[in-house]
Image (tube, rainbow, N blue to C red; front, top):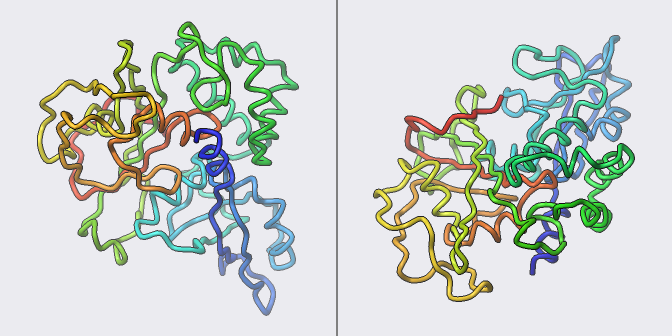
Length: 329
């Protein structure tokens, strides 16, 4: 199931409906909208070569620096496209209507995206994930420059087989996601997880008219390393991980151990003696709203991004008083 699930994740895409901002239209008629499939695990600036020719004749003089906004919110280029969609579209819209810009870059909101910034953002995230999993980044630092470039090309092309071939050459084994064997020595000690928390002022069962995010100050996003249980026959569920990170979003405090025993490795739900505290929110990962009783190890193996982070988008109606340190910009 792991190979099939990962293949679906790597093939995942968001249909985009792009129109050029009116302030940048210098010809009549204005260019029509542009439709494109954006890989979930990709990054918006990587679409520039496909998008620019469509709008180029209408652009005013000047140099191009592409950026996007959704309902007036500039979109962070260093967050995977699928995560942006899961977080910002409370009620998913397809196609996703975005405005594309080539001028007036909002440097006060977005960090500059120059040269190979997207590539190095990915490589640095991969290093961070390896540090979380193994306590060091030797595996990535020991990769040759050509292997790093080839790995990045596999990510851009959505080439899972090529990615796994490169991953198999890295020691220790390439984290949770790669289809390679793992010994106990090379087993990751923690799961790299990033959580993006958004509060809304509406019932979670009716998000069609929810107010859009107007500022990134309204989103809390943190890196949350989750310890892997060392005792054989135990595992953590996605629910357990959420209890560790956002316990205030549960209707009652956890009253049992965070380690839940499973009857067998293939069992995909926690045993019946677990306390199922109600979670007051919606969790999305790779475009799905998973059962919170899924083993976190399964989520990490099947639903992580190419950089090995599990990206959780959480939409809730409660105000978060605090989160663990380590908020990312």
